[in-house]
Amino acid sequence: MLARASMERHGGSMAFPIKSTLVLAAISLLASCSGPTLAQGGGSYGRDYWGHRPGPKGFKTVIIDAGHGGKDPGAISRHTGQKEKDLTLEMAGRIRKELGGFKTILLRSNDSFVDLDDRVKFANRYGDAVLVSMHFNSGPAHVRGPETYYWRVDSHGLAVRLQRAMENASPSESANRGLVRRRLRLTRNPEIPCVLIEGGYLSNAGESKLIQSPAYRQKLASAIAGAIRSQSANGDAGTGPLPKPINAPMSRPTDAKE
Ligand SMILES: [Zn+2]
Image 1 (cartoon, rainbow, N blue to C red):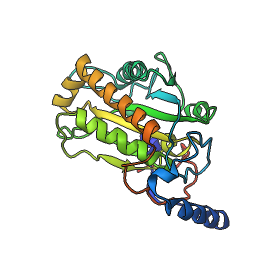
Image 2 (cartoon, protein in one colour):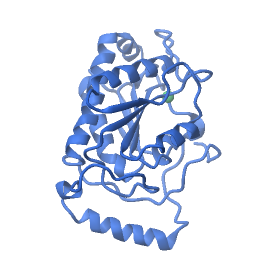
Image 3 (cartoon, rainbow, N blue to C red):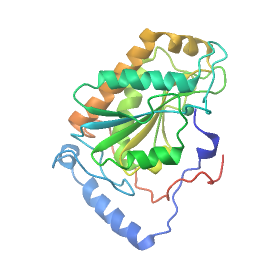
């Protein structure tokens, strides 16, 4: 579930017209290359304010963010009683175990509250890394299925891979939003590629019961880890054209709510 205050409208502010022209020129140069060529030069792209660049290849560090925690339970299933904050923490551990060979960092490893801005600051301590924020969803009773949120151009390939992998692991979907480009504090503000994933709807009776099963959570964790591995091995190859760069400012807690 996304924090309501962090839901924002799409669309960019052109507050930096000169800089944005330069950035757009640089991107159009990059975009004129073919996929595999973009990934040449190895893995580390370091930190980048806008994220107007191809997705990373060859990264070895994965920051796993278990959504919510402490005083913030996130969504609570009325079907199973499970809390999103517990499920995300448990999933973070499973994903970590599936990522042997990578350096994995858990943004929280217990039931503690960590402010979203502090999560961003933590992620920005790393350069050659990606951030994956794990959540479970809540909405109308009939809606089910995984969703993936990204904003930065350099996060698109990883987002496509994560959504595909979770859809393959999920037995059915209904009226869910799929892959969404949305500016959130955890999809815009980190200066590394960052994606927020919703592993399914706790508000849907069938999906909530499925998520209650450790075997299903393991299947989901394995799919998520596979998508991360695939991005590191292949870069953006096979994930479709990059989205257009948008010079949107950093997302703030006080931004307009939807
Ligand atoms: Zn959430």
